Length: 196
Image (cartoon, rainbow, N blue to C red; front, side):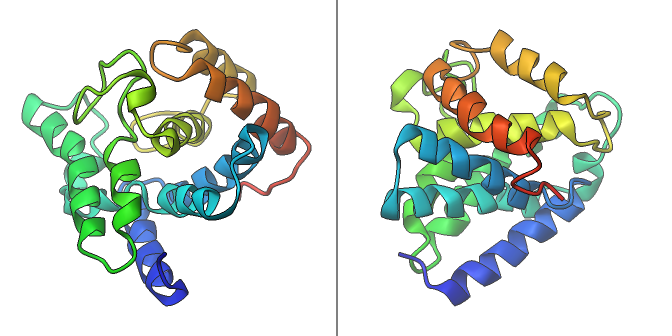
């Protein structure tokens, strides 16, 4: 397990990556969303903490992506898309080299896989995608939809939910999406947890 001091340093680096990409607080918000989903799924203890930590750090690999690519408002070129797609590999590689962070690497590596196998970097599908990665993929997508970025305007929560539901079984694991909708969304709509 990672030490508290090491996690603090890594979380600061991940926050810097979020800032560089024009989405300050993204990793923190994703971790907040993941918590109630874990509870709804009955995932506790060390496994839950591992997934929460990976959620905070999932975009740390964006530190290796040129800032102008991260904040580009127009359609990305093929080369620029490749830069973006490599952030999962680079984040995982970085975590593999940090004492105690290695168990998070596989979760971070696969957080952009799709349930139908059309994601990246490994085109892994279904339950071959680590559970933590499938959970983070949903929370990350929800946060990206509901918060403005340099290349996207925010949508209302009901629109974000409709988008997630339309991708159940294709982009996202339907059973985990159900847990997200039952666990995280009610807490969000009731004003807890704070998403600021």
